[in-house]
Length: 303
Image (cartoon, rainbow, N blue to C red; front, side, top):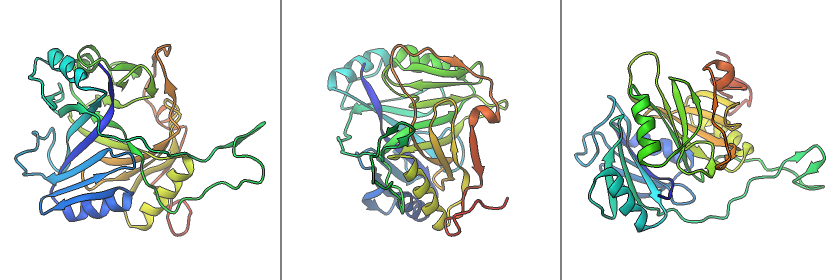
């Protein structure tokens, strides 16, 4: 089964006007607007839908308040939907819907994302001037996300959820916190994770964050500074994850949980051997700025 990645996410929210402003500031393109519906997309056509929390078309929420209500995974071809339908015991169709063991609505469809020519700025590493001689680097005034890269969920059924995604859907384990969390990618070859399931000490189900891929580390900085200038609150960032090597910037999202800009994650294939880590602040971040950087002064905020 060729699952390619996240094709669409849908939030259920109370305040569409605030979410409209946030996602436009975040760098998404508004493609459709109605009284109770907002539809955005990234550069490659990955969709971000926002609907009022009372919309009867939404799957049941896994937590109270504004949150993620559905993740649609894109597949390569219609035959993949047929195989998924057999694995899930559901009727086949253009869109195949079910829920995962966490209670989250998930669906599958032939991917509608489009190929885009997007390139980050090469780095002049020692002995390897990737950018070249007499070539300045780029500075971004704001971010324009390429796609939705991954989702992180809290769960109280970690073992069941891992078994479902790996054994039923064919996801691959990248790394794990034994008994506490697992990083999963939807295919053997790809970025470090498309889904991270985290079981906190207290019983809880819900959204931690949705992550948006940007071109390079400079766009992480430019996007974070812009979102700060727009008045949105940074949770943490910029920073760098030791497990996936990615640079990040997390912002509080009025649609639920956090939104993350990230780039430069490790690329894996079938030869990768999953590692085990003990949770701790040094494992989460090699370095990070708590509260972020002020977009006007360009200095770290005082906490």
